[in-house]
Image (cartoon, rainbow, N blue to C red; front, side, top):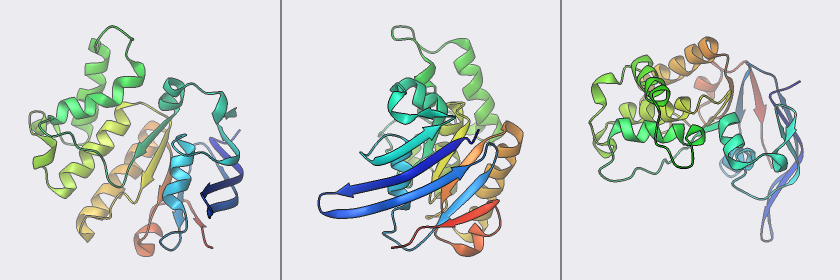
Length: 214
C-alpha cells in the first residue's frame, strides 16, 4: 500500500484551473521531488494533501481517504514544511517546535514529559539545543530552516511535505539542509514529497522526480 495516492486530483480557484487530472503514487520511505515552472501548482498540490484547499478527485494517505480523516489524525500522518512559515513575534525556538506536538496533546492538559522529550530529541538531532531561548525572528536563514523542519519532525508524522525548502538559502546551506532531510528520512523511515525549483539540487536527493506542467 502506498504512503500517498493521488487520483485525478484537480484544483480550481474561480475560473482558473491550477491542477487537472494529477495521478501520483508515493511509496513508503520514498523521496519524490516535484519540479516544474512557477505556477505549475506544486505548492497547491502539497496544500491539497494537507486539506488546506478544496479539490476534486481523490487523495489517500496510508490507504485512507483524506475526507474521512479528522484534522488531528491528518496532522499525525502528514507534516508540512511551508515555503513561508508564520513566525509569531517574541516566540522562542523551543515553544515554536513544541507547536508540532499539538496533534498529540489532550484537549485540556498541556505538554507531557514525553512531548518535551520528543522536542528535546529533535532539537538535539538538528543541532539546535543551544537555540532554545532564541526568538525565531532573530535566526539566520539556515537556522530558521532547521527550526521549521524541527517543528515538522516533532509531529512524528510518517509523511513529510517540503515546499521549496531551500529557496532562501545559499548553495552550501541548501546542501546541508537536504542532506539532513535525507539522513532523517532513512533514520526515521519517512516518506518525503518535496516541491523543488533548483534542478541541480533536485537531481541529487529524491529517488524520483515528477514534472508538473501546463
